[in-house]
Image (tube, rainbow, N blue to C red):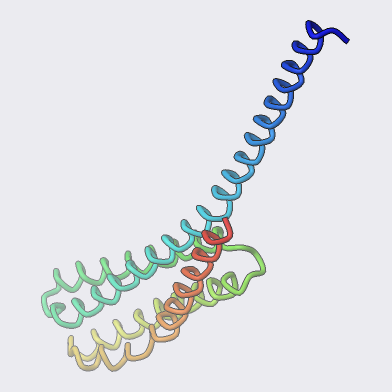
Length: 176
């Protein structure tokens, strides 16, 4: 074979190999991006949503304390109680959104289910404590005693869930 034929064939072959290598590299890059988007960003979103639930729940508890400490005036009582109810409802709604973000059948899924039940129980407990507070002529000690421990289960599950979500996020990032 002549050099005038070998040289263009060698150039075409090297160009074809370079093109195939580029296509393979783009394919692997797309796979890595998809894994990052699905796995890592999904776990990051779940962890953020868990932090949002915790933040709202903490505000709800603070509003309950405002009810007890500042609820002597009817307008303040209504204001702080409505704020508390709103934050509790928001916490439950955020927990339900978190439920959609965690993997089905995972231990975190069971924790989120338990968290939602705990938040709903706490919400009902606070309603009963509010009635006890009002029936005790706005005595903060009676309201505090009636609410004692109502949010403990939800709070402990939330702490454990946040730890689990943080581990899951870190593991997904390391794997990616």
